[in-house]
Length: 252
Length: 252
Image (cartoon, rainbow over all chains, first blue to last red; front, top):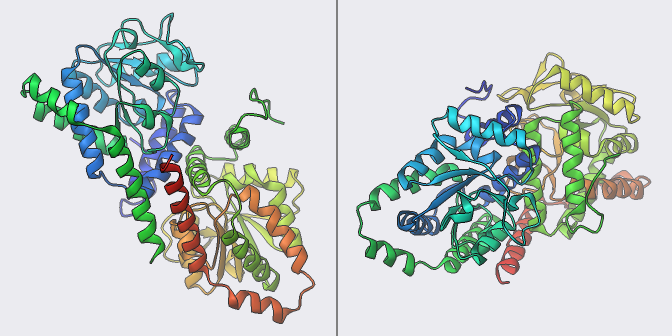
């Protein structure tokens, strides 16, 4: 796919590989230039948490899996970064949860929307919704434009890799929001119902596996998992992990 | 220069302004797409240290100034990000230290090299070196290609904004390396002789001012400053600052 001069033995090979994947996304009209910068921010937080999936993320993944299985109408929101990084995994997630895929871009562009839809279809998606004239109230950014058949009527929305104003308003509308965000301090991370503080590349396969594990569990048990789950302690554990690692590293 | 729709009162105006400057660098063929991601990583670390120059950076700036003034042959290594962000400041730094400017790119491109040289000359530089057939041993990335008249024969090399394998090998060759890196955990930050953990936009004017302040100081005193300086405690103070701020932010 990507011609890369670095050998796989380079300590930052994977990080550089995904950085290249996003640069390719820009060249293909899928990812915005600003999306590259946003990805770099994520890289910094991943660096600080130690580039691994921690127990706090595992807890959030379990709750997210139960919540998606209980959902009557789940929607997966995709943007230019997730489209470039994990299109096949998102399609797989949509299949195992019977969710709809919906494009939602911060940096508005009908052309980019179309490119993302085409790319998802090329990767195997059957249907990908795009914003129509429906609007989320009190959201000032372009993210307010949603699909009537998607987010507007959804009960659970999976919104990875965002730092925005949409999550808070969706929660106010009575919906559940699951997010994946390496920055536990972001607005989305702070406001979501379930916050998976992990790299989307690591956590999507784990989330899909957890859904497959729980898919024959009865509704009562799934409800028990969701009811027991508390997002605040999970976010705090992520922050504590950042702190622990910095303390350990600074003591060297 | 840059048309920007945001007002200067926006809380993230400066950060967005420099992000745009890099995007412009991409359009002008100076900055790589991957460079935008690297910048995003820096943004996150800057956010975490509080977007200000701390005392640990000031200490490193003083040592860097003395080291550059003592140098018989200083070289300033420039890449696509520093070219887009601080060309005039780097030219000024080269003037006050009688250093040579040398282009060194991780994502190799003769075309981009030429664009960077042309841009520096447009900004007032007289000479800008580029890699010839000279190589640093044990560096596998494209950064191994250097200039015989530049880094190969330099005694002090100023390498801002990198996360790489070059610093370690240059140190092994007996050279001193000064870096500017917002990530105190990066390999360059960890291996350099002097690590300025600060935003290059904030610290370059301070470094130039420090050089102007010290330029009439005698060699013995300058040597005293360099000998007294310890990089490890300075890096540890930067890590402790990240820690303190994360703790404060998470306590909200």
